[in-house]
Image 1: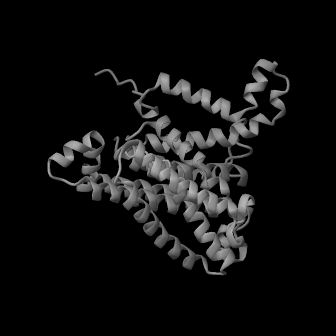
Image 2: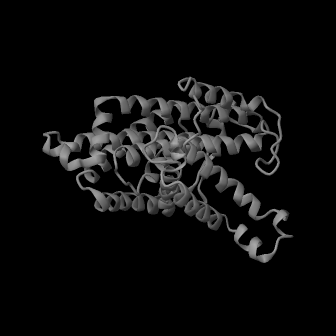
Length: 335
């Protein structure tokens, strides 16, 4: 029966756009309204991004501070190709696929030669360089701090307009499913088992005569490619490239999502990514609502700061559930 649970979850998620139910306080309108579907689509996108980051951090034990660079690379590559160069979307996707392999291969070839905090600092240095480059807007290619809107005429009609938000939702769901299948397949391969061994004790792997460099590089390239693909889906869902995608704050958010859900678990990062994104989007809306105006200042002031609320919830979760949401043990039926 447990094997049917993921299939049941997918069926439920696929039928969400057919529901006109209202969830007051959680969604801005009926479930199938464009505003609600866009929020749910972003939750699915970041759930997939968190799962990809968990492949690197939770499965292999590589703490990268530069994963946002690959997400931004996917978004800006397709956007620049379509908007600035006038390419078709398929041509932009082909270019993003090439960048999604070449960029992590280049950065990983340098970064995975070191371990621990040194690895984190090298990846952070690459990410900071990419962030500065995007925000300086060289030649007017990236839009600088204002970002770059996607040229509508370069995108198929089924992904344009408020009425087609449902297609973007299904695109995000398809990306999440593809990410889960790729990660599951990769973890069942000899390389996946080697990643787990490296996470437990890299030195012992080396003593056994297996060089961990290639295995770590493979994990970095695969996680980077999934991050690049996620950046492309995020571009289509959001309609533009945001400079916030290039900052280290995004990588830290992915790290929080993974820890919140449970590192190295089958579904923890997915749930953590979806929950964190939902709270991040809805708490910002709550902070400006009139609902808080009638509350005492001791409650109103902290509730108007989404990051404060998120940080408090994260601290509580870490202490209450040190293994994340995946560590929750459901009660068993009595025999």
